[in-house]
Length: 586
Image (cartoon, rainbow, N blue to C red; front, side):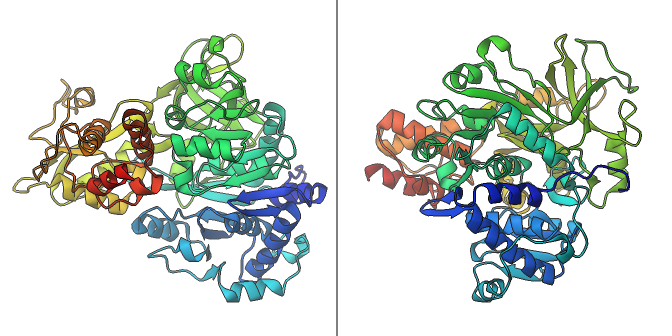
């Protein structure tokens, strides 16, 4: 690091803001509000406890805390101690969390009672325990000094490790440092112009890098980070009500969520950024009026993003914009030569926000993070796998993927990981997964063939998937085929699979019901949303292939078609469809 300008870290940037506005609200959650001064003091106390428990620069700390002010306290404390956070989403299957911990080898787990990490055996700090409260009370609330850390913290040290889907069937941990944070903050100030007191919705989970964007947009600019429970963030009526109730000024949402949420009376004169998937002209027509709309692009391998378009209007078309502060984008051919303006090539990303690489996978890191022949000596660039072009005005346009990676409801999914799990099952011979539909209607559909002598039960197979993979990676439907359609070269014809009119066969007969009754309308609506010919009232909505976004659409459809407002919890917590039907009568 000798001779290199040292950039600012998250603790430095946050502490500077806390010093400027100690009495301003930093975090709002239901009826709880924390000022910058109180948040900083609590984080400092916990940071000193973590230091005494062995945490220092480049040390990973697993973080399993549900949405709450305590989550922000813990995240800041880990960074103040010099460590990096490894988020363990409480909703992930235990097997997924156990793999992440085994692969990344964090030295400590910070959790709350409601954020238990099943299957994770680590020394832990329980935030809501009496012993933690008593221990923290003995520490100073002043800012942690460099001399107190196990070694001085620099911007080259790790900030977080976030796991993404892996094409070979193994998730990979992306190791991101503090190096790109100062440029991220500069970009936010320049493009979004957040003002002190502005309210930023914390919509994305911290298991995704967009969650860090929300935190930075609020806490590193003097704004208020507004947190809410999962059911209050459900795209559709619930999300709209939350945006209105808390008078949100800034929000980042994927196109699938924007497509099912009413834009009326929300974020007026504020900002909305679409990210995580391709933004459509229809969304621009709906959301750009009355607010400043942006379209962001950038994979997890950079510090949240690298290009932004906007403010955009319907007349602009939908591109991914220009590189933000400190970022560089190259459009190259297969021999790493720049292509001409307007021609399509692969996008290579470079600049201050580039990740260090993949945890424990030097071969994959070397294959994806290459020397940058167009940058300063020693610089690198990331081979994104995305196709794109640059126009005559220097703006970039996304043109799809060059491999089997897809974006589904804003989540990055490698179809190969799902296929690898399926073919690893003793009853499955071959497997292929395709995406059916677009935006809110997009869903994963898996096709499998059975091994000789075996019988595949699609319901049982889907249960096995749900026990191992996050909800957004579990196919809505699994179809068992006698044989796959193939192309002349013998490869599976995925286009033919995607165009199939798939239907799911129920193993139990549907119970009789009165025609045109509210219950009947509910079951028909569920069948339509899930692309099923019919549904069994005794079936669980999520076991049938439902997800949180479709739950929001179901609630909205029932309100429009029946004039009934079904509570979010009535859908999320129902054992079966019949229990949801009972809520139609109040």
